[in-house]
Length: 254
Length: 156
Image (tube, rainbow over the protein chains, first blue to last red):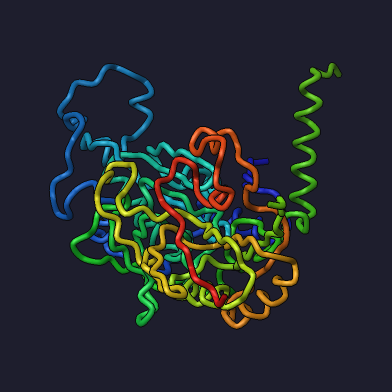
């Protein structure tokens, strides 16, 4: 029988959402239309429209050593062109943000190529060749993985994941890279991801409502969402893993 | 003089408060007799970016404003989420609760009695203030901070 990945244990909505996001066969719903130029502005690695800087000559122009792995793996567009490695980093609120750092690394590993994700408790960074990054970043911002109020593109000074939201429903940001335009109800980036002011505001759309967030979140939260302890399958799974790890510590002989 | 220990309480709001809400809340607190000391706790909002590639650049932030409380101007340095209070006696808490209730219309709050501020000098306080520390200053600010307390004239 062919192997069929199961992605994640759990019988709750949260677990189902995690599985959905990780499964590359599931097409992520597009919710907003942030343009390529806007993504480049938010990331702040290069001026929109400028050429990609390179770290090495294009692969076609350089002599590659005879290597069976190089023959097997098709290089990504960025690698082919010799682009620099650049990054995008996200901070996600634990108040029902649609994606979470740990999950981001999983889903990126399943969905994208040529990436180096780094996971921390409240933020997640993904590094890859610049033109690949722009393509991936667009997916990460425009789809159901992102909420303008509860997910932030933050290169430095990321604190906010575990803090209470502010009165406007936005996650705390010491540098306030994005602000809520109360009249239009739209979130606008006024600084790039490292906190430098942008010449023009970048609109990233309306924050999603609480009902949508609760139905699409991938984090357990006993107060504002679904509690981990209510998910019997997830608890059973984690207890099994815990039990096996402890037993293995004693090197059991069967 | 008799050494007195005053009760303390803490006001937690469900959301971090905008400067306008903080101003409203503090004016309500000031209107209640019996509040001795108060600390505004929250995430710091520095005027310049403290670290990272943009270090040293100005950090305009809509939540960092100067608010008017009682007869004083208070430049906010934090995004207020918690207010610590030292009060003269426990009877002040119900009055305080009744006074601030109208401020929290859109989200909830909690008022909790306990011990949240220092009342005895710690080692760092001793290093900073010496053996005769003013007890009114203890626990109000980090000993390394250069900021001074703001004195609000209450209703008495």
